[in-house]
Image (cartoon, each protein chain N blue to C red):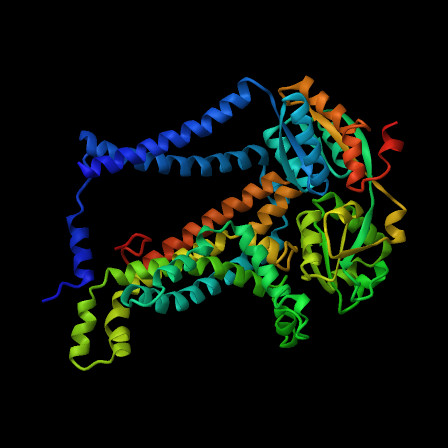
Length: 299
Length: 261
């Protein structure tokens, strides 16, 4: 019988043993963990300390920020990140499967192109989006249709400087990460399981939806979480493409930027802490809801 | 054996790159002083050129940190530096009050103007036009010197409500505002007129409300600086009419001679 991927995974988990702190190997493993974990924890502790030291009393906390405004920003951040993450997974599943199972002409080139959003500096993505929507087709050609955004405006859906711009900016980057994750996830699923289903009369599509997709469930959750996390932290492209308008296109990363710019460092750090708390909480909740092992490195 | 080779190769690359990075840093801090200059984004072009010339003449290296005047203020109050060049004297006065800088000198006038696409397709000629329905407006946040000024003037003119209700977007620095207009993402922006020399395919329109009050760019030396002599040498160079002054003039900054004398 074929050994399905999930069986293999649970076997691995069962084999996980308690760490022995003796010996060079254990020291190497735990040492590496503590170096990086320590860095992250120190960052958070330094932030908390900074806010607490300069706060004094709870009255100070209330005055540190415009809380109503921050709530708007939190809402917009969560809504846009969630939309971007779901869109990313919807697109990443077919592309990931395509890359994992099929060979076709120019595959390595396409593979490299799909990585462009990962390697490009964020600001370049923002600038490129701005040019695409406002200078394409080039004005010099004068086709009489105006820019892409003029056409979109005609349909009542202007993109630049709107909330839609935030989602597009987030999606552009997040989807590339989701695709990588989905491809790895499909790579780990034994192609024989689909072949078996097909020999029993299922079409290729049927085999995918009935056999492969259920097995890639954890991969989808992981891809969605990664896309969500990327969207939450995205800043550069949003700043250029959607602007930093208070209460309108302000996401949490923009809020931090605006507070830093106005010299309110305590406020900026406080928002950062809120962001950290919300992100950790969300990731934990999703992990609990999707049960064990829905980490980024699950397979 | 092959595996060990790969690991060793990786470690070698790591050490090689690290030493290259660190060596640079050590050379900087030991031999020749490196000045950290916090410079307003609107003054980027001339100050960059002046810094390069100053480096060539004196051998003192200059690291420019660019951003909105308010953003720079936050940074320098947190990490220090040597020189602060905001696009408005008020930042220097505040820094002086808080004991961050020693001396502040103003060296150039800055005048705000409207920036529109070439040919002014939306026929924007006055501040009132910014409140029109079909006009996409972009201005800088209050944290940039030009944004602070823009908000003040618009508020005084009583147009702020109308403009904010319309199609308004805010950006972090003056250059980002101009970029939006240049790329056609907005119809009109409010920027320093000196940008005229950097942004092509744009027209600049002067508005009486802006002309009434000019702003002054200034420079100050930070108390936290490690190189006081080199810092004052740089500031003297920057405001010297035959050196920094020439560059500022080339980039369209006026009134330097009348101020520094």
